[in-house]
Amino acid sequence: MTRALPPSDLAPLTRPMSRRAFAGGAMVALTLGLTACGTVNRPLGHHLDPDGGFGDATRNNIAFHTGELQYGEILGERFANEVPTTINFAFNSATLDENARAILRQQARFIRHFPEVRFSVYGHTDLVGSQAYNQRLGLRRARAAVNYLVSQGIDRSRLEALVSLGETQPIVATQERELRNRRTVTEVTGFVQSHPMVLDGEYARIIYRAYTGAGED
Image (cartoon, rainbow, N blue to C red; front, side, top):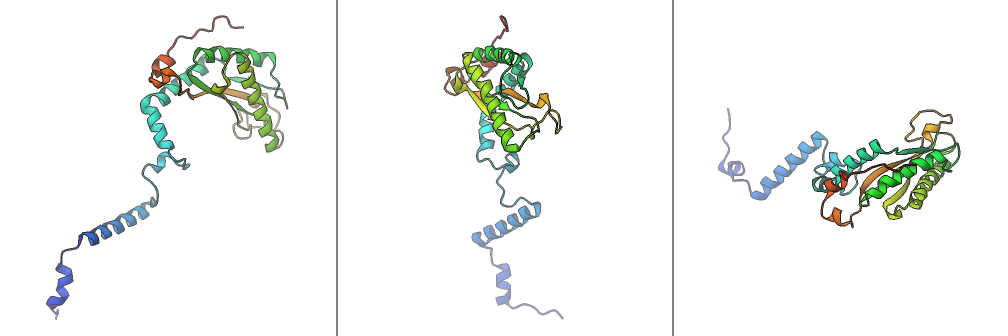
């Protein structure tokens, strides 16, 4: 036989839930749901910034909508299509040979034509030698390329020498000496923010400006 509950026991079941209690219950349910999905304690949009670089997603979003990211990629592709971006080095050397200097002169002509654009030079090595030594050698190669570009009239503030070891980005995966891994690569990396055309957002005019390789050596 079922016993009827007295009015005193029914009261908690029929009393309207307070706003605070409802909010607390909703928060618990939300927390449990997020935990079940494996996303608790992760900010909205975390998948766009998996390495945890604070603000990177926002900066990329702004760059895209202002045109910087989109047009930077377009110009980078144009640079790679119109100018050799890579020079190579002898084993255990950061000395520029004549072929490397000729390629850097072509790069310099392109870079001079786009004074609003920034470039980076990445130095690489092959897999022979210690990681620490190769890091220093890669940086020496990047600096050698940058110094030569500066000698061709490029403002050093628009260039950055970066190192990337051959072990991390080899063209040919081999432990032996490999010329193609001993290189520097020049890439478009952004715009000079203080330049008037960039401040005006004239990215399209920058990217599609006519360029000619006339007079190349």
